[in-house]
Length: 249
Image 1 (cartoon, one colour):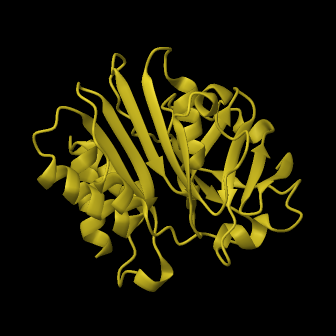
Image 2 (cartoon, one colour; image 1 turned 135 degrees about the horizontal axis):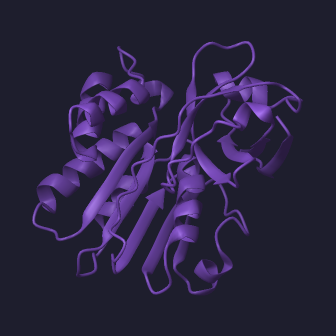
């Protein structure tokens, strides 16, 4: 661990580097994630890669009241050795998509910011970001200046994203919609897209990044193996996330 910086009261930036990252292979997909195993733990937790420059890996980690990584990240973790697992990503917007809309809670901010930075000029980009309070400077300045960024203030539980998406008036054309956040809300949005907007011309990625403690499933499901098995079976991302939802219920 090279450095630890508070981005916000609820978000800490961890910068990783050193010889151990020499073999790290980025997918180049802007919402790619990695498994992180911290000292004293044996289970991995998944985090979006905020940035990778070929030698340094940046992860923005949400500080929850409790959690495997939080317990480590709240302290002086600089100098510690961690384990990083293979990167995976799912952002699937066509290179010529005329519009890309992004919606997510605090856990999705790194992916949304990186996606925003990766899109070519001329794309109609809009972002709805849910957080306890706006984080100035987190997204590209042009996005803020154009009015295309909307901050939705909410507590860490993230309670309003599903209703926000259900109220959107979608643009025409074969654009792309990306969303990530609490799993129960993501399932609701996937149902909305599949049933209410089945004839829409745009593509979408909707992913459950975390599970509210009060809705904890009886059986845990690790998204990494589910994703890899689905890809090996030739399934689409939508089919894979449906499998993941089914295993968590």
